[in-house]
Image 1 (cartoon, rainbow, N blue to C red):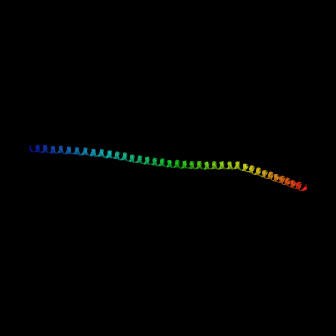
Image 2: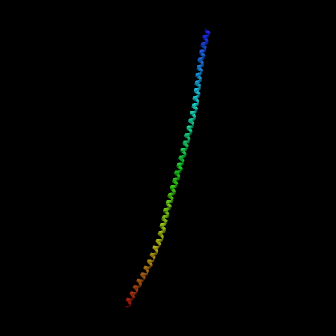
Image 3: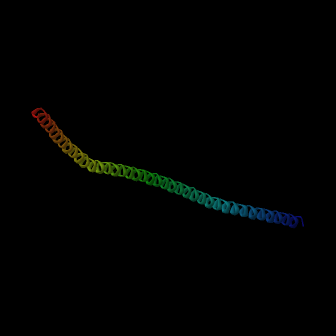
Length: 138
């Protein structure tokens, strides 16, 4: 009977050890699953980090494109300013070109009037001399 009791006791211990072994195996499998899950989470975080880097790169590219467009707009504004200045200068030259012939015409007319005045003065002087000679001759 003691042998049977001892067998029963050992078989009970054996069952307890087998249950303990199953629990440990389950925990090891659970730890393995957690390790795989953490690897997946790590991969997802790495991908998210890469996406953030790509978005930052795109944002910097857009900033650079914005700066280039701004520079082009400044160059266009400068070109418009220079063209406007050239147009105003051309307009000034046109007015001067119109003014010069007008001034020459006025100068020529003034010379003609001076010549006419000289002729009138000469005629008046001759008339005065004629009158004076006529008065003296009488």
